Image (cartoon, rainbow, N blue to C red; front, side, top):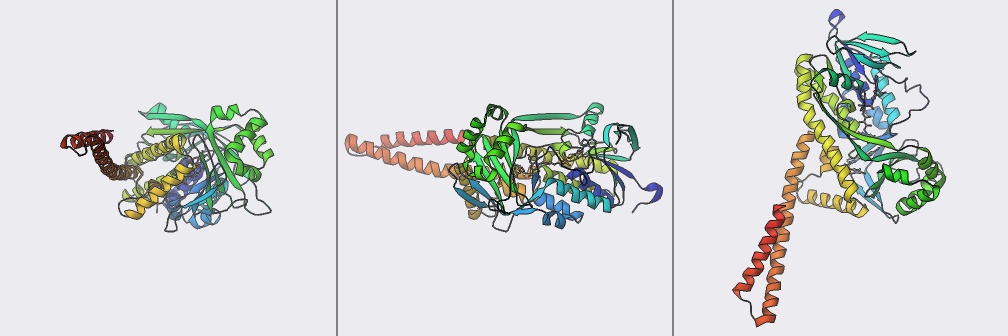
Amino acid sequence: MMSGRDRKRIAVIGGGPVGSLQACFLAKKGFQVDIFESREDIRKAEEVKGRSMNLALSVRGTTALKHVEVEEKVVSEGVRMDARRIHTPDGKLYSIPYGKNGQYLVSLDRRKLNETILTAAEKLDVGLHFNHKISRFDLETGEMMFQGPDGQEVTAKADLIFGCDGAFSTVRRQMMRSIRFDYSQTYIPHGYMELTIPPKNGEFAMDVNFLHIWPRNEYMMIALPNADKSFTCNLFMPFDMFESLKTEEDIMKFWHENYADSIPLIGEENIKQTLLNTEALSMISIECSPYHHENTCVIMGDAAHAMLPFYGQGMNCGFEDCIIFNELMDKYKDDFSLVLPEYTQIRSPDAKAICDLSMYNYLEMRASVNSSWFLFRKKVDNLLHWLMPGRFIPLYTMVTFSRIRYHVVIKKWQRQDKLINSALFAMMGASTLGVSYLAARKAAFYLNGHLSLHDLTVALTGAMDFFSKSLGN
Ligand code: FAD
Ligand code: EGU
């Protein structure tokens, strides 16, 4: 442990889930850590607006929380989800467990989670500076400028700056201006809107330990349970659809067609008022590189890799960032000039992979996923896993319930996909050949009463042609 003059000062910009967790990791290592957060202390705030109210925590997240001994508390404040519950348009319900081995997700209140980690950081002697919004800083000297609590300018200085200031990161923007930095962002045509299902007679209005899903191709709704016995629903829909629902009649017609079973739960008045009076929020995917500058600055969490929420991995991935960074600190005995470049090198292919997977899942859900398709796909996945437990692991299992590096997840998935496709094609090929043979025999029988070698050859080459064309695609 360092002390006195040698003790390195670290500034963490952003006291969201990732910033506060990274501060805990660093404080445990003996650094002098300060968090600068633009908003007021959420533990005293009336209400946090904006971001979706609850989040699904999975293995990558829980593993990181264990490192700083907050996992138990966080999980105890959440609600476990052992399975998905699919709601069909006509109100039928189906359940598909997340796994056979007691695998589950935990639905967390965003605010409570943030409060718990901030309090843990405070106990580790992290300095908390709320109402400090970073405006600019010097990448070489570590001098930072903040807009302070009363609008006055405040300065501070650190040996290392962590940009954990979210998708619209100021730290990242400064890096973009100062160094050779790649950046790309994509907004999708969909927006999301939050609705609440209040408790019914003091109890959960739907079965509690589920992630509820209403898959409807381009419109999708999901609901996660809260500890206060309510559910938070998220409606995902193209912005122009949101805009086309102008009157109470439009809204209720749409709701009756798609989410009829949720009307008595959310309440008709609640649905109308929410749709008429709230703005749909946008979703963005951001990839950039590098994540660091020399030995002075590094970005983490959404600041480095904002992703679409369709795998429930944004925060989990940000938490895993902290594990990776910490492991490199151990490996290089806290030498920032070695840790930072290797952090970029190791982490960027994985962050890119989960950003891509989240985008892919969005495109797939939007294009083809209704209730039957969702159920069918999950059943096929489970069947294949049951047939070849060693060779086939469903994609969501690798993403959600393992710590396999995200870029390796994609590789394994592609390999599995090839395996499945060739198995499918082999089956298709065999049946095509069989059917052709029978057809040729039947034709031959009608024509001249017996099967000539010529007829058989024509049928077989036709089948082979079809087979090879299909394989070629
Ligand atoms: P943020 O949570 O954005 O925190 C950044 C912090 O920095 C904020 O407190 C902000 O006030 C502060 N800040 C910003 N600018 C400045 C500045 N200039 N100076 C000082 N401070 C600043 N992830 C999951 O793992 N599971 C899910 O189920 C899930 N569901 C989601 C559902 C939706 C609809 C959305 C939109 C996202 C979801 N996510 C989910 C993603 C998750 O919300 C994010 O990945 C996560 O919040 C990232 O944490 P962060 O700390 O990096 O950034
Ligand atoms: C979206 C918004 C179900 C929280 C993808 C599953 C999500 C979450 C799924 C949100 C879906 C979608 C998976 C998990 C999870 C599913 C997953 C999505 C949590 C493929 C609070 N997604 N999410 N897939 O399998 O792997 O249950 O806002 F609806 S958890 Cl879109 Cl596992």
